[in-house]
Length: 273
Image (cartoon, rainbow, N blue to C red; front, side, top):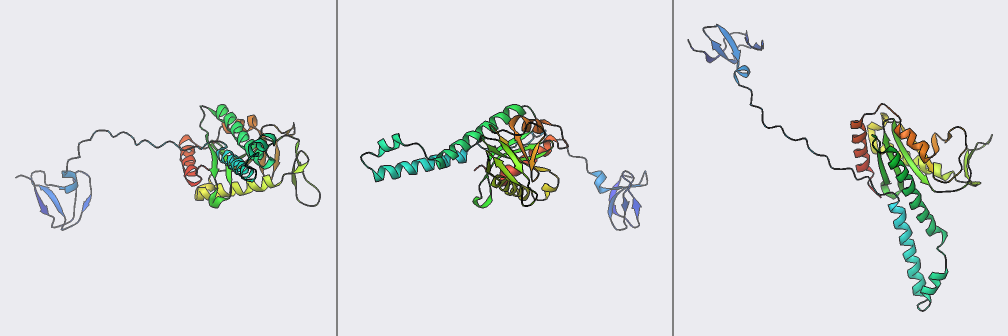
């Protein structure tokens, strides 16, 4: 007698997959074998289709080192030249040629060059490794920018590049707060800025921030750091480029996939400035 599909009068079990079948459910009854087969086992598996190529992810917009500082320098320079030419229509060009650029303009130009120098060094020293570098990232609500972000196997580094000269030290008096001194001047505001930048990265990562150690770094190109030991202030590191690159190249618990996913999340949350 050929097999046929019917409604079960009593509970039974599929002869192929051993699934329990309730009374009243439909199944295939093979009278010769006196066995029940569930309808799922009667459906032949779909033939495998052509293997689809994995979706290509868009490249990360890693930003341009010093781009926002350079734009600000050009904006200030242009405005100064326009004011001078407007105030002195006949000799404005001569006055501009004789006068040096003011310090507030040059500071942005030096800043842009410092960022480019740090980026170039880190890119070269980490080439071929898993670390992903992001440059000149905009902070939310117009609160400035982050010079560089490095997502490495041992954590995330928030890097503020400084092309400054002079001796660097941390003053820790018996009473009062510690101060960052560069060439004898109080530059503690740089550490305050790193505090805000690290906090912004934590917010950008959301819950994932609990899994990633986030380290602030002041990276100097020309200043004189202490010869022995590693200088820190409020847990932020004060390093040269070579020492920072060594940390970025060190092994750590984070995989290439984790680094890529986190770099993409940060690139989207903190776009180029």
